[in-house]
Each structure stands twice: as structure tokens, then as C-alpha cells.
Amino acid sequence: AGVARQTLDLFIPLPPETKPEDLDPWPGGLRQVATVALPIARAILQKAVQGGDKVDERVLSADDGAVQLYCAGETPRDDAMLLLLPGAETFDALAELDEAVGPRNLILLNPQFSTPADLGLFKRNAASTKRFFGEATSLRDKFATTYCAQELSCRSE
Image 1 (cartoon, rainbow, N blue to C red):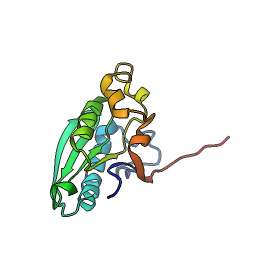
Image 2: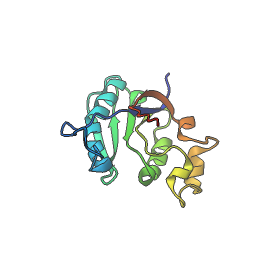
Image 3: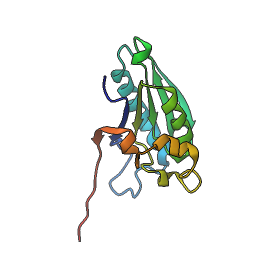
Image 4: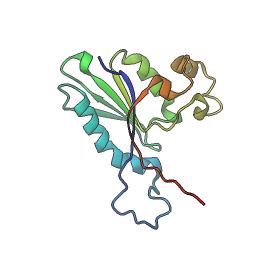
């Protein structure tokens, strides 16, 4: 048995129309990022699930690009769920899925929050948030980062 709760932090390739002088390579925000990331998420989930070939999708938030992907395996134990770009707006769905999938794999791809404080004033102290995080102080404590490939930019003066 592997790690059932995982976080993947991936560098999403920039759109081909991006130019070096562009101040914001993603003018469409997370919705635009999701259009590029969704095929990557599908491929990851299919490869992660033994016998997985068909991926079902449900948009959790069109504005934030958050999508829930499900892939059935050879047995129910092999099933897995992946959430693309989960954030504060879709946190309640994540908390429900975390309980519903039980011991099966639940993968977060490029989550948009890391601590309860990131969820906003009203959600950070909600009962569902406390139940989800439990003793964990950050998302990384509950969903281990099992793969990270990000582009970083450092500046010096």
C-alpha cells in the first residue's frame, strides 16, 4: 500500500502564444491554467490507477478551474480521485471527498491553499475545516507532497 493522500506540485507549461515580454502569461487566470493542466491530470490519473482507462470529470468551480477527476480501477480498492486546482471555494467538496473515498487514493494537483488561514476569514475556524485538518497545521501534513516540479525565479539586487 502506498500513500493514499498525496499532493502533486507541477509546473504547467505556458500556452504556446506566450511571449517573453508578457507580464502575465495566464491572463485568463486559473480557468486558463486548467485548460492546459486538465489533459496532464487525466494522464496522471490513468497511469496511477491499475486498470484505469476511463476518467470521469466534474467541474467544481468554473471560475477557479477546479475539476474533480475519478478513475475506476480493476477493483474498487484501485479506484482513485484527483482534484485539479482545489482552492478555498472548493474546500467543502474536498473535505467531503476526503471522508467519502476512505482508504483509496485522493490526489491534489496544484492546490491553491496550504493552511486553514488561506481559506478565508469564515472558513478558517469552521467545524468542517477543523475536522479536515485535525492536528495538521498545513495541507502538507495531511497530503504528502509526492512529486514536485515547479519553476522558480530568484532575483537579486
